[in-house]
Figure 1 (cartoon, helix red, strand yellow):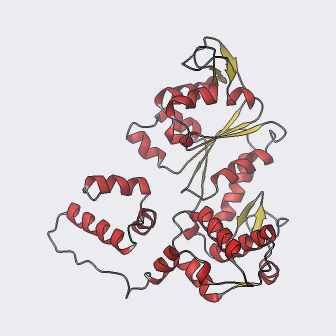
Figure 2: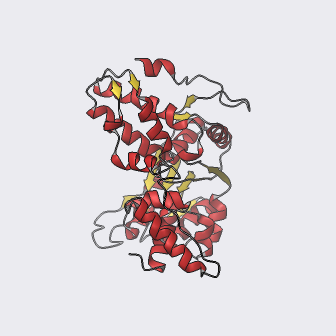
Figure 3: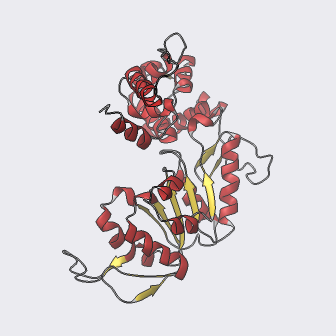
Length: 340
């Protein structure tokens, strides 16, 4: 098919030298821009040393792929690699899941059970959405980092463990420390080696190349004979701000290929929100708001947020992206200004 022939990603390109050749594929990560080339080099550097790693970036930027790549390229690659999404767990169960529990430690604990750290001994544990951990679990995690040991929930015996910890978050952990939601000492122990993943909108040329990459992949999965992406479809995809980043783009292309009946990926297969955002991007379509000198800052902020939400049809992800803030920050401002 023409798409893959035009922009085939070569997994054998050099990925260490400063003059890194792009685009390329490395451990399942498609590096298109110079910012992603820098991320690949950081992965290689992190893999060469056995220290904690903190990966930060917006939702959908591929932090899980980066963590897995570090493990596979490290000296621990023959040992277990276990991922834990703490944000997907009930807070009261996180400690039990990670550290295990003794019989009778809590209601329903009828048998003792080993936690993830025991299961991953000698290997790597990836803790995603680390900022969702409660205070008590943070203290226990700090002990693992400092003393290489822990206690099961309800237990009195220390268990020695040799595990590398890679943590990830889409939050500003330094802000969380300032707000007393995350322990400062744990932050500094995790932030020994930091990898910041750029958003998709900050990766020049990435949308076009990734669209081709995912198109080729899912054409094979679904047995579709796709030959091209229409110029208008490329235009729409490039002008969308992608608040869900690479994960959102992948899902959009996957769905489009699944629905596709011809040989060309056309705008009819693209979600309406993407077409609306792209068409609203011109100055003529963008509403304006005049600020009166002497107006209170709070009132200006409230009106700007209100107008932005109206402009994107209430899509909070897209509004936050346009305003240049996180979704959590937007929700905080919505509550502050009683915007619902």
